[in-house]
Image (cartoon, rainbow, N blue to C red; front, side):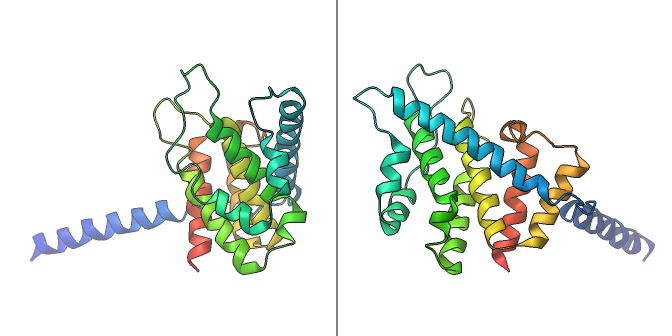
Length: 208
C-alpha cells in the first residue's frame, strides 16, 4: 500500500511540474509600446530591404513586394498557402534563397493595415493560423536560417494580434520579453526559445 502511495505521489509531482512548465509565470507587461516598437522597427527594415532590392534588382529577378501588392486579396492568399512548405535553402548555398524572399515579401504586405482592413475577423484568424504554421518551419531545420522570413513572420503575427486587440496573448508575449530582457527586435529572429514561445502562445489563442 505504501509503495502504491509512493507511485501516486511521484506521478502527481511530474504532472504538477509539467503544468508549471506549460504555464510559465510571466510578469505583467507595463510597456504596451514594446511590441508596437518591435513591429515598427522590423517592418521598416523589411520595407527598406525590399525598396533596395527593387531598385537594384537584375532584370532576371522579380520585385516580389511590388508584385504582391498588385494582386487581389484572394490571389495573395492563394499564393501564400503553398510557399515555404518545402523548407528553406541551406545557408551554405551560394545562390539566393527565393523562398525566403517570397515569404518575407508577402508576409510584409499582409501585415500592412491597408491589407488587414480588407479582411474580416475570420479571414485574419485564418491568415494568422497559416502564418504560425509557416513560422514553425523557419526553425529547427539544420543549416537553414531564413532571416528575413523570420522577421516577416514575427511582424505579421504581431500585426494581426494587435489589429484584433488580442490583449491577453499580447500581454503574455510582452511579459516574456520583459522577463528575459528582450528589447532588440532584430535579436528575436535568432532566438529560438522566444519563437517557440510565440508559436505556442498564438496556437493556444487560436484554439479558443
